[in-house]
Image (cartoon, rainbow over all chains, first blue to last red; front, top):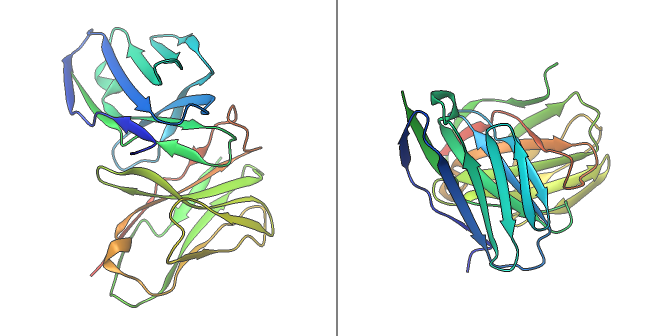
Length: 110
Length: 114
């Protein structure tokens, strides 16, 4: 069983739509959860970081963690063409080793 | 401000050849990481370093070696290239390794072994 499972998509939405991206994980000890955005031919960049359960909001982005279900989500409101990228979830227990999902490819159509 | 710089950007190797992927960061970060990214597999940690002179294995270290003689540089060595090592390699760094400290990634080295 993979440590982290993520639907690879691809996901295609019209501009202005609400996007929901999700990951599940198997290790209940994970405490730290991250979402990275990766544009084509570029390295990932950190988008959101959450510790333990709960919600975190940053502008149009909201990250949710449900540790009881081992499920994390990223919501993008009022999606823009510039949001078109691959979104990777990641999680860690200690910070030395991070476990990444396979990434979900998102296209926002103008 | 260059951040994390990886060279080369692209390389084609023959089976059995060796090469070194270079990684340099100018942010005075203590922690550095090497990942490989394969289609449908996500990022896998190869090796990491918590400071000069200290390295440790990640999830997929076989076939690779690393060294960390300075804070800035963290080269990854492939001794006997195999087709299974065809991948995109990313180097990353962070200040403390704590989960709330973001990892800064380079733009990757695309390596094909034929």
